[in-house]
Length: 422
Image (cartoon, rainbow, N blue to C red; front, side, top):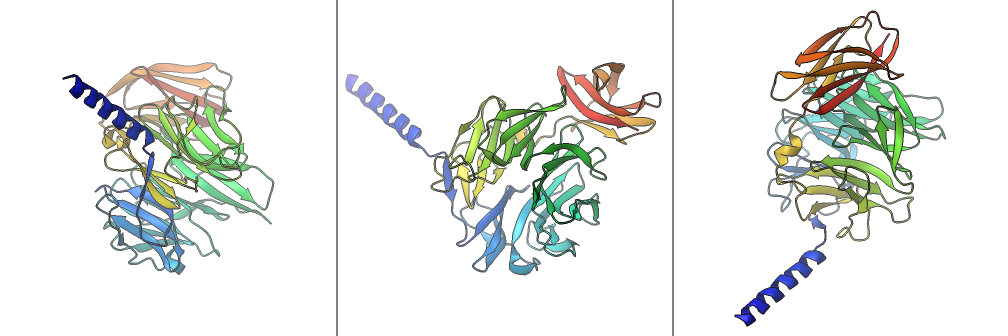
């Protein structure tokens, strides 16, 4: 009996040592010569990757067996060299691909693609594509094609943000749909020392205004409390405090976050560019909502440069590092917990002149009850009432022109957003 117990103890110790030595990232074999630009997981749990053209290979590939095999999905991608820069999927399962001068759409899991938008200006890179709020698709480009928008799932498009300048370039580096009904975008400048920008749209992407200046923003995201995060080249991570209307520096200078993934359990993953930090690149994780971060690079090999994240069907993280990697464990139990929509605070129109509809959207169409407050920029409450149902029509005709904060407290959670009154 003693020998059996000793043998069992030895086996457990060995197993623990093996677990401790387990690399966090496991490389997934992809077709040879691909240099990946993006990864997404579709509604059928298929993994799609996009690639620059490299040695006559590029475009889009799909795996339906967790990355064990891949099928080329380039039918209809008629762009030069088939370099795809970004992928996105909407709530109806339509796929979108951003490329040079073009946006493509597929309604059959990538089997065929149709060009749904073309930017005639020379070499406009549609390097960011985001779907959200049901049928809205936004693509980030550069100059006079800063942001283009479709409000009907990619059927028709229009330019909604012109960021052209004389003698220098501005390009969109990220677009994110906020939990408060506001859409944010960030940009960086080329051939200029001027700071980049964070833009905001309060009317579902139809119009945009400057939210704040920034240094060299590379990524936007939100923490588990819905607070806006901004990753900057060489400057770390910032968090926006809506109460003080200021950015808080929460991750030190030297790190360059270019991808932000927030998952349940108060975890935030950052994909960081390796330069100019002298090795401070790759993946970082916070398990306390952004109060502290640590590196998580075991398994990446020599190239610590994480640029895109996605989550597979069982809750593991997929990471683009030029190649494709997957975390060896799950970051949460159920993938639907990650994709489930939470309550979102939405205002329309915003900015407004007389009346504004304050809507607290929820996926289950519940009848909600809470407290609604409207606060001016000096912290004075100008309106307070009971919020019941899903929508409240506010008459602001007596308010002075300016910026206000709308707050709704429901079930001990506060939802807030900025409101602009002409």
